Image (cartoon, rainbow, N blue to C red; front, side):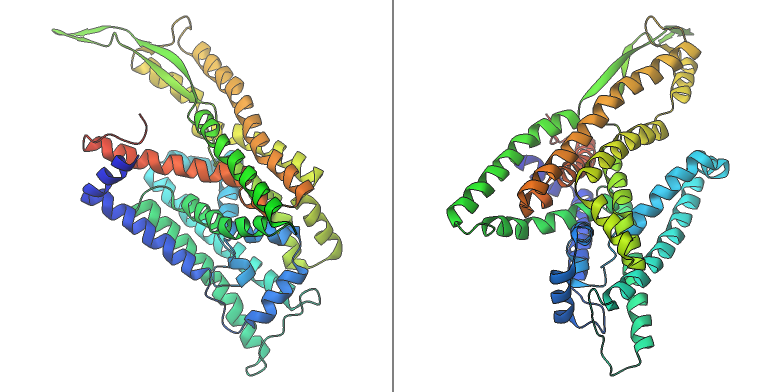
Amino acid sequence: MLSSLVNAFKIPELRNKILFTLAILALYRFGAFVPVPGIPFHAFADAMQNSGGVAMTMLDLFTGGALSNFSVFALGIMPYITASIIMQLMQGVIPAVNQWNREGEAGQRKITQVTRWITLVLGLINAVGYLFLFKSAAYGVVFSTEVPEILTDILVVFTLVAGTAFIMWMGELITQHGIGNGMSLIIFTSIVAQVPSAIFSSLTSSADSAWGIAITVIIIAVIIACIPLIVFIERAQRRIPVSYAKRVQGRRVMGGQTTYLPLKVNAAGVIAIIFASCLIYFPAQLAALFNVGWLNVVANALSSGPVNWILTAILIVFFCYFYTNMVFNPEETAENLQQNGGFIPGIRPGANTVDYIRSSIKHITLPGGLYVAAVAVIPSILFFFSGNQLIQAFGGTSILIMIGVALDTMSKVESQLKMYNYDGFFK
Protein backbone atom coordinates (compact mmCIF):
# COMPACT_ATOMS: atom_id res chain seq x y z
CA MET A 1 0.00 0.00 0.00
CA LEU A 2 2.72 2.46 1.00
CA SER A 3 4.84 1.63 -2.05
CA SER A 4 1.81 2.15 -4.29
CA LEU A 5 1.24 5.61 -2.80
CA VAL A 6 4.90 6.46 -3.34
CA ASN A 7 4.65 5.26 -6.95
CA ALA A 8 1.53 7.38 -7.45
CA PHE A 9 3.45 10.52 -6.50
CA LYS A 10 6.28 9.59 -8.87
CA ILE A 11 3.96 10.15 -11.85
CA PRO A 12 3.61 13.92 -12.41
CA GLU A 13 0.18 13.72 -14.04
CA LEU A 14 -1.26 11.50 -11.30
CA ARG A 15 0.44 13.52 -8.55
CA ASN A 16 -1.12 16.73 -9.86
CA LYS A 17 -4.57 15.11 -9.97
CA ILE A 18 -4.27 13.86 -6.38
CA LEU A 19 -3.02 17.22 -5.08
CA PHE A 20 -5.76 19.05 -7.00
CA THR A 21 -8.42 16.77 -5.48
CA LEU A 22 -7.06 17.28 -1.96
CA ALA A 23 -6.95 21.05 -2.47
CA ILE A 24 -10.60 21.18 -3.58
CA LEU A 25 -11.69 19.02 -0.63
CA ALA A 26 -9.72 21.26 1.75
CA LEU A 27 -11.50 24.28 0.27
CA TYR A 28 -14.83 22.53 0.82
CA ARG A 29 -14.03 21.89 4.47
CA PHE A 30 -12.92 25.50 4.91
CA GLY A 31 -16.26 26.69 3.53
CA ALA A 32 -18.10 24.56 6.09
CA PHE A 33 -16.83 26.91 8.82
CA VAL A 34 -17.48 30.25 7.05
CA PRO A 35 -20.80 31.55 8.47
CA VAL A 36 -23.44 33.20 6.33
CA PRO A 37 -23.24 37.02 6.64
CA GLY A 38 -25.75 38.50 9.06
CA ILE A 39 -26.19 35.32 11.13
CA PRO A 40 -25.77 35.67 14.92
CA PHE A 41 -23.40 32.72 15.18
CA HIS A 42 -23.51 32.01 18.94
CA ALA A 43 -27.28 32.44 19.19
CA PHE A 44 -27.77 30.11 16.25
CA ALA A 45 -25.42 27.46 17.71
CA ASP A 46 -27.38 27.50 21.00
CA ALA A 47 -30.69 27.23 19.11
CA MET A 48 -29.43 24.26 17.08
CA GLN A 49 -28.22 22.48 20.20
CA ASN A 50 -31.52 23.00 22.05
CA SER A 51 -34.02 22.63 19.19
CA GLY A 52 -32.42 20.36 16.57
CA GLY A 53 -34.28 17.06 16.20
CA VAL A 54 -33.18 13.70 14.83
CA ALA A 55 -33.91 14.75 11.25
CA MET A 56 -31.78 17.88 11.51
CA THR A 57 -28.96 15.85 13.08
CA MET A 58 -28.91 13.48 10.11
CA LEU A 59 -29.01 16.34 7.62
CA ASP A 60 -26.09 17.92 9.47
CA LEU A 61 -24.16 14.65 9.17
CA PHE A 62 -24.32 14.78 5.36
CA THR A 63 -23.13 18.40 5.35
CA GLY A 64 -20.13 17.67 7.55
CA GLY A 65 -21.37 20.03 10.29
CA ALA A 66 -21.90 22.91 7.86
CA LEU A 67 -25.62 23.08 8.70
CA SER A 68 -25.06 23.38 12.46
CA ASN A 69 -22.57 26.17 11.71
CA PHE A 70 -25.06 27.73 9.24
CA SER A 71 -22.11 28.21 6.92
CA VAL A 72 -22.13 29.16 3.25
CA PHE A 73 -22.20 25.40 2.51
CA ALA A 74 -25.12 24.69 4.89
CA LEU A 75 -27.25 23.11 2.14
CA GLY A 76 -24.48 20.65 1.36
CA ILE A 77 -24.60 18.30 -1.60
CA MET A 78 -28.20 17.20 -0.98
CA PRO A 79 -29.83 19.45 -3.62
CA TYR A 80 -27.52 18.06 -6.30
CA ILE A 81 -28.09 14.44 -5.22
CA THR A 82 -31.86 15.00 -5.21
CA ALA A 83 -31.63 16.55 -8.69
CA SER A 84 -29.61 13.54 -9.87
CA ILE A 85 -32.28 11.18 -8.53
CA ILE A 86 -34.96 13.15 -10.38
CA MET A 87 -32.99 12.92 -13.64
CA GLN A 88 -32.38 9.19 -13.17
CA LEU A 89 -36.11 8.61 -12.66
CA MET A 90 -36.94 10.84 -15.64
CA GLN A 91 -34.78 8.65 -17.87
CA GLY A 92 -37.09 5.75 -17.09
CA VAL A 93 -40.35 7.60 -17.77
CA ILE A 94 -39.54 10.34 -20.33
CA PRO A 95 -38.37 9.01 -23.73
CA ALA A 96 -36.59 12.27 -24.66
CA VAL A 97 -34.41 12.16 -21.53
CA ASN A 98 -33.68 8.47 -22.12
CA GLN A 99 -32.63 9.36 -25.66
CA TRP A 100 -30.18 11.94 -24.27
CA ASN A 101 -28.62 9.18 -22.21
CA ARG A 102 -28.01 7.19 -25.40
CA GLU A 103 -26.48 10.08 -27.34
CA GLY A 104 -23.07 9.78 -25.69
CA GLU A 105 -21.15 12.88 -24.63
CA ALA A 106 -23.56 15.38 -26.23
CA GLY A 107 -26.53 13.82 -24.45
CA GLN A 108 -24.67 13.74 -21.13
CA ARG A 109 -24.00 17.46 -21.44
CA LYS A 110 -27.75 18.08 -21.79
CA ILE A 111 -28.49 15.90 -18.75
CA THR A 112 -25.79 17.68 -16.73
CA GLN A 113 -27.16 21.10 -17.66
CA VAL A 114 -30.73 20.20 -16.65
CA THR A 115 -29.40 18.66 -13.41
CA ARG A 116 -27.63 21.92 -12.62
CA TRP A 117 -30.80 23.99 -13.06
CA ILE A 118 -32.84 21.57 -10.94
CA THR A 119 -30.12 21.78 -8.26
CA LEU A 120 -30.36 25.56 -8.16
CA VAL A 121 -34.16 25.46 -7.91
CA LEU A 122 -34.01 22.91 -5.07
CA GLY A 123 -31.28 24.94 -3.40
CA LEU A 124 -33.46 28.07 -3.55
CA ILE A 125 -36.41 26.20 -2.02
CA ASN A 126 -34.22 24.75 0.75
CA ALA A 127 -32.59 28.12 1.46
CA VAL A 128 -35.96 29.86 1.88
CA GLY A 129 -37.16 26.95 4.03
CA TYR A 130 -34.18 27.10 6.37
CA LEU A 131 -34.53 30.87 6.66
CA PHE A 132 -38.16 30.60 7.77
CA LEU A 133 -37.38 27.65 10.06
CA PHE A 134 -34.57 29.33 11.96
CA LYS A 135 -36.58 32.57 12.32
CA SER A 136 -39.59 30.64 13.65
CA ALA A 137 -40.49 30.25 17.32
CA ALA A 138 -38.88 26.79 17.41
CA TYR A 139 -35.39 28.29 16.96
CA GLY A 140 -35.99 31.99 17.53
CA VAL A 141 -32.88 33.28 15.77
CA VAL A 142 -33.00 37.09 15.55
CA PHE A 143 -30.96 38.76 12.83
CA SER A 144 -29.16 42.06 13.14
CA THR A 145 -31.40 45.16 13.12
CA GLU A 146 -28.69 47.43 11.74
CA VAL A 147 -29.93 46.79 8.19
CA PRO A 148 -33.48 46.18 6.92
CA GLU A 149 -34.58 42.61 7.63
CA ILE A 150 -35.59 42.00 4.00
CA LEU A 151 -32.03 42.74 2.87
CA THR A 152 -30.64 40.28 5.40
CA ASP A 153 -33.12 37.64 4.23
CA ILE A 154 -32.13 38.14 0.58
CA LEU A 155 -28.43 38.00 1.49
CA VAL A 156 -28.88 34.75 3.44
CA VAL A 157 -30.84 33.03 0.67
CA PHE A 158 -28.47 34.24 -2.04
CA THR A 159 -25.42 33.05 -0.06
CA LEU A 160 -26.86 29.58 0.56
CA VAL A 161 -27.82 29.09 -3.12
CA ALA A 162 -24.41 30.38 -4.22
CA GLY A 163 -22.81 27.93 -1.78
CA THR A 164 -24.74 25.05 -3.33
CA ALA A 165 -23.68 26.12 -6.82
CA PHE A 166 -20.07 26.36 -5.64
CA ILE A 167 -20.17 22.83 -4.15
CA MET A 168 -21.61 21.51 -7.42
CA TRP A 169 -18.84 23.28 -9.35
CA MET A 170 -16.15 21.86 -7.04
CA GLY A 171 -17.53 18.35 -7.46
CA GLU A 172 -17.48 18.65 -11.24
CA LEU A 173 -13.92 20.01 -11.13
CA ILE A 174 -12.76 16.95 -9.18
CA THR A 175 -14.52 14.60 -11.61
CA GLN A 176 -12.99 16.33 -14.65
CA HIS A 177 -9.49 17.21 -13.44
CA GLY A 178 -8.94 15.19 -10.27
CA ILE A 179 -9.21 11.57 -9.14
CA GLY A 180 -12.55 9.87 -8.52
CA ASN A 181 -16.14 11.05 -8.54
CA GLY A 182 -16.30 14.57 -7.14
CA MET A 183 -19.76 14.40 -5.58
CA SER A 184 -19.03 11.07 -3.88
CA LEU A 185 -15.74 12.40 -2.50
CA ILE A 186 -17.50 15.47 -1.08
CA ILE A 187 -19.99 13.21 0.74
CA PHE A 188 -17.05 11.05 1.89
CA THR A 189 -15.28 14.13 3.27
CA SER A 190 -18.43 15.33 5.06
CA ILE A 191 -18.87 12.00 6.83
CA VAL A 192 -15.20 11.59 7.76
CA ALA A 193 -15.15 15.12 9.20
CA GLN A 194 -17.76 14.11 11.80
CA VAL A 195 -15.86 11.05 13.05
CA PRO A 196 -13.41 12.79 15.46
CA SER A 197 -16.20 14.65 17.28
CA ALA A 198 -18.24 11.41 17.38
CA ILE A 199 -15.31 9.55 18.97
CA PHE A 200 -14.92 12.30 21.58
CA SER A 201 -18.68 12.21 22.27
CA SER A 202 -18.55 8.42 22.67
CA LEU A 203 -15.62 8.67 25.10
CA THR A 204 -17.43 11.22 27.28
CA SER A 205 -20.97 9.82 26.94
CA SER A 206 -20.75 7.85 30.18
CA ALA A 207 -20.20 9.16 33.70
CA ASP A 208 -17.65 6.38 34.11
CA SER A 209 -14.74 7.32 31.81
CA ALA A 210 -13.38 3.76 31.79
CA TRP A 211 -16.73 2.44 30.58
CA GLY A 212 -16.87 5.11 27.84
CA ILE A 213 -13.37 4.20 26.65
CA ALA A 214 -14.23 0.48 26.66
CA ILE A 215 -17.41 1.01 24.61
CA THR A 216 -15.57 3.22 22.11
CA VAL A 217 -12.76 0.67 21.69
CA ILE A 218 -15.28 -2.15 21.14
CA ILE A 219 -17.20 -0.15 18.51
CA ILE A 220 -14.00 0.77 16.63
CA ALA A 221 -12.79 -2.85 16.80
CA VAL A 222 -16.08 -4.14 15.36
CA ILE A 223 -15.94 -1.55 12.57
CA ILE A 224 -12.35 -2.48 11.70
CA ALA A 225 -13.27 -6.18 11.71
CA CYS A 226 -16.19 -5.55 9.33
CA ILE A 227 -14.15 -3.57 6.79
CA PRO A 228 -12.43 -6.60 5.12
CA LEU A 229 -15.79 -8.38 4.79
CA ILE A 230 -17.40 -5.31 3.22
CA VAL A 231 -14.46 -4.89 0.83
CA PHE A 232 -14.69 -8.57 -0.14
CA ILE A 233 -18.40 -8.33 -0.97
CA GLU A 234 -17.99 -4.98 -2.74
CA ARG A 235 -15.45 -6.57 -5.10
CA ALA A 236 -17.29 -9.90 -5.44
CA GLN A 237 -18.43 -10.87 -8.95
CA ARG A 238 -20.25 -13.60 -10.76
CA ARG A 239 -18.29 -14.34 -13.92
CA ILE A 240 -20.36 -15.66 -16.81
CA PRO A 241 -18.06 -17.46 -19.29
CA VAL A 242 -18.10 -16.12 -22.86
CA SER A 243 -16.51 -17.94 -25.83
CA TYR A 244 -15.70 -16.47 -29.24
CA ALA A 245 -15.97 -18.51 -32.42
CA LYS A 246 -12.90 -18.84 -34.61
CA ARG A 247 -12.93 -16.80 -37.81
CA VAL A 248 -10.41 -17.01 -40.63
CA GLN A 249 -9.50 -13.77 -42.43
CA GLY A 250 -6.89 -14.55 -45.07
CA ARG A 251 -4.05 -16.16 -43.17
CA ARG A 252 -5.15 -14.79 -39.81
CA VAL A 253 -7.28 -16.73 -37.33
CA MET A 254 -9.54 -14.43 -35.29
CA GLY A 255 -11.35 -15.33 -32.07
CA GLY A 256 -11.28 -18.71 -30.41
CA GLN A 257 -10.51 -17.33 -26.95
CA THR A 258 -12.63 -17.57 -23.81
CA THR A 259 -13.31 -14.67 -21.49
CA TYR A 260 -16.04 -13.80 -19.01
CA LEU A 261 -18.82 -11.30 -18.41
CA PRO A 262 -18.43 -9.87 -14.86
CA LEU A 263 -21.61 -9.21 -12.85
CA LYS A 264 -20.91 -7.47 -9.53
CA VAL A 265 -22.84 -8.52 -6.44
CA ASN A 266 -23.33 -4.84 -5.60
CA ALA A 267 -23.31 -3.26 -9.06
CA ALA A 268 -25.01 -0.09 -7.76
CA GLY A 269 -22.13 0.59 -5.36
CA VAL A 270 -22.86 3.50 -3.02
CA ILE A 271 -25.44 5.03 -5.38
CA ALA A 272 -28.31 2.96 -3.97
CA ILE A 273 -27.63 3.91 -0.37
CA ILE A 274 -27.03 7.59 -1.21
CA PHE A 275 -30.28 7.78 -3.18
CA ALA A 276 -32.22 5.96 -0.44
CA SER A 277 -30.79 8.24 2.26
CA CYS A 278 -31.72 11.36 0.28
CA LEU A 279 -35.32 10.22 -0.16
CA ILE A 280 -35.58 9.20 3.51
CA TYR A 281 -34.46 12.64 4.67
CA PHE A 282 -36.37 14.58 2.03
CA PRO A 283 -39.35 14.98 4.45
CA ALA A 284 -36.89 16.56 6.88
CA GLN A 285 -36.08 19.13 4.22
CA LEU A 286 -39.81 19.72 3.68
CA ALA A 287 -40.26 20.10 7.42
CA ALA A 288 -37.52 22.72 7.41
CA LEU A 289 -39.33 24.52 4.60
CA PHE A 290 -42.87 24.57 6.01
CA ASN A 291 -42.25 24.11 9.77
CA VAL A 292 -45.62 22.37 10.28
CA GLY A 293 -46.10 20.33 13.43
CA TRP A 294 -47.34 17.12 11.86
CA LEU A 295 -44.68 17.33 9.12
CA ASN A 296 -41.97 17.60 11.79
CA VAL A 297 -43.39 14.50 13.49
CA VAL A 298 -43.35 12.59 10.17
CA ALA A 299 -39.79 13.76 9.41
CA ASN A 300 -38.51 12.61 12.81
CA ALA A 301 -40.35 9.28 12.47
CA LEU A 302 -38.77 8.68 9.06
CA SER A 303 -35.34 9.71 10.34
CA SER A 304 -35.19 7.16 13.14
CA GLY A 305 -37.05 4.13 14.46
CA PRO A 306 -38.83 1.11 12.90
CA VAL A 307 -40.39 3.10 10.04
CA ASN A 308 -36.95 4.37 9.06
CA TRP A 309 -35.42 0.88 9.16
CA ILE A 310 -38.10 -0.77 7.04
CA LEU A 311 -38.34 2.06 4.51
CA THR A 312 -34.54 2.32 4.21
CA ALA A 313 -34.21 -1.41 3.50
CA ILE A 314 -36.97 -1.33 0.87
CA LEU A 315 -35.56 1.74 -0.89
CA ILE A 316 -32.01 0.36 -0.93
CA VAL A 317 -33.12 -2.91 -2.56
CA PHE A 318 -35.28 -0.94 -5.03
CA PHE A 319 -32.43 1.38 -6.04
CA CYS A 320 -30.03 -1.57 -6.35
CA TYR A 321 -32.36 -3.06 -8.98
CA PHE A 322 -33.16 0.29 -10.53
CA TYR A 323 -29.57 1.47 -10.94
CA THR A 324 -28.30 -1.94 -12.10
CA ASN A 325 -30.95 -1.99 -14.84
CA MET A 326 -29.98 1.56 -15.81
CA VAL A 327 -26.28 0.83 -16.29
CA PHE A 328 -26.44 -2.78 -17.51
CA ASN A 329 -28.64 -3.45 -20.52
CA PRO A 330 -28.99 -7.21 -21.27
CA GLU A 331 -30.28 -6.53 -24.82
CA GLU A 332 -27.27 -4.40 -25.75
CA THR A 333 -24.86 -6.85 -24.13
CA ALA A 334 -26.35 -9.83 -26.00
CA GLU A 335 -26.32 -7.88 -29.26
CA ASN A 336 -22.67 -6.89 -28.81
CA LEU A 337 -21.70 -10.48 -28.07
CA GLN A 338 -23.50 -11.74 -31.18
CA GLN A 339 -21.94 -9.08 -33.42
CA ASN A 340 -18.45 -9.99 -32.22
CA GLY A 341 -19.01 -13.73 -32.56
CA GLY A 342 -19.30 -14.30 -28.81
CA PHE A 343 -21.71 -16.64 -27.05
CA ILE A 344 -22.37 -18.06 -23.61
CA PRO A 345 -21.67 -21.83 -23.67
CA GLY A 346 -24.91 -23.79 -23.62
CA ILE A 347 -27.09 -20.73 -24.33
CA ARG A 348 -28.41 -19.86 -27.78
CA PRO A 349 -27.55 -16.36 -29.05
CA GLY A 350 -30.31 -13.76 -29.22
CA ALA A 351 -33.37 -13.86 -26.99
CA ASN A 352 -32.13 -16.81 -24.92
CA THR A 353 -28.91 -14.97 -24.09
CA VAL A 354 -30.90 -11.86 -23.10
CA ASP A 355 -33.13 -13.94 -20.78
CA TYR A 356 -30.13 -15.69 -19.27
CA ILE A 357 -28.25 -12.43 -18.54
CA ARG A 358 -31.40 -10.77 -17.17
CA SER A 359 -32.10 -13.75 -14.91
CA SER A 360 -28.49 -13.78 -13.67
CA ILE A 361 -28.68 -10.06 -12.85
CA LYS A 362 -31.92 -10.54 -10.90
CA HIS A 363 -30.52 -13.45 -8.90
CA ILE A 364 -27.29 -11.67 -7.99
CA THR A 365 -28.80 -8.21 -7.32
CA LEU A 366 -31.21 -9.44 -4.63
CA PRO A 367 -28.55 -10.75 -2.19
CA GLY A 368 -26.43 -7.69 -3.00
CA GLY A 369 -29.32 -5.36 -2.15
CA LEU A 370 -30.14 -7.27 1.05
CA TYR A 371 -26.50 -7.10 2.10
CA VAL A 372 -26.40 -3.30 1.61
CA ALA A 373 -29.73 -2.92 3.44
CA ALA A 374 -28.50 -5.04 6.38
CA VAL A 375 -25.24 -3.10 6.72
CA ALA A 376 -27.16 0.18 6.60
CA VAL A 377 -30.03 -0.71 8.95
CA ILE A 378 -28.38 -2.80 11.71
CA PRO A 379 -26.15 0.06 13.01
CA SER A 380 -29.20 2.37 12.94
CA ILE A 381 -31.01 -0.07 15.23
CA LEU A 382 -27.99 -0.23 17.56
CA PHE A 383 -27.81 3.58 17.67
CA PHE A 384 -31.54 3.82 18.41
CA PHE A 385 -31.14 1.75 21.58
CA SER A 386 -27.66 2.91 22.65
CA GLY A 387 -27.63 6.59 21.63
CA ASN A 388 -23.88 6.36 20.97
CA GLN A 389 -22.90 9.09 18.50
CA LEU A 390 -20.00 7.03 17.13
CA ILE A 391 -22.41 4.39 15.83
CA GLN A 392 -24.43 7.10 14.09
CA ALA A 393 -21.42 8.86 12.54
CA PHE A 394 -19.54 5.66 11.67
CA GLY A 395 -22.56 3.39 11.16
CA GLY A 396 -23.64 1.26 8.22
CA THR A 397 -24.65 4.02 5.82
CA SER A 398 -21.51 6.01 6.55
CA ILE A 399 -19.09 3.11 6.38
CA LEU A 400 -20.59 1.78 3.15
CA ILE A 401 -20.29 5.20 1.53
CA MET A 402 -16.74 5.65 2.78
CA ILE A 403 -15.55 2.19 1.72
CA GLY A 404 -17.37 2.37 -1.62
CA VAL A 405 -15.93 5.79 -2.46
CA ALA A 406 -12.45 4.75 -1.26
CA LEU A 407 -12.51 1.60 -3.44
CA ASP A 408 -13.73 3.54 -6.46
CA THR A 409 -11.03 6.18 -6.03
CA MET A 410 -8.32 3.56 -5.49
CA SER A 411 -9.46 1.75 -8.62
CA LYS A 412 -8.98 4.92 -10.65
CA VAL A 413 -5.52 5.45 -9.16
CA GLU A 414 -4.80 1.77 -9.85
CA SER A 415 -5.64 2.12 -13.54
CA GLN A 416 -3.31 5.13 -13.78
CA LEU A 417 -0.48 3.20 -12.11
CA LYS A 418 -0.95 0.21 -14.42
CA MET A 419 -0.60 2.53 -17.44
CA TYR A 420 2.92 3.36 -16.24
CA ASN A 421 3.74 -0.30 -15.39
CA TYR A 422 3.59 0.19 -11.61
CA ASP A 423 2.02 -2.24 -9.17
CA GLY A 424 -1.38 -1.04 -7.96
CA PHE A 425 -3.17 -1.30 -4.62
CA PHE A 426 -5.02 -4.54 -5.37
CA LYS A 427 -2.85 -7.63 -5.56
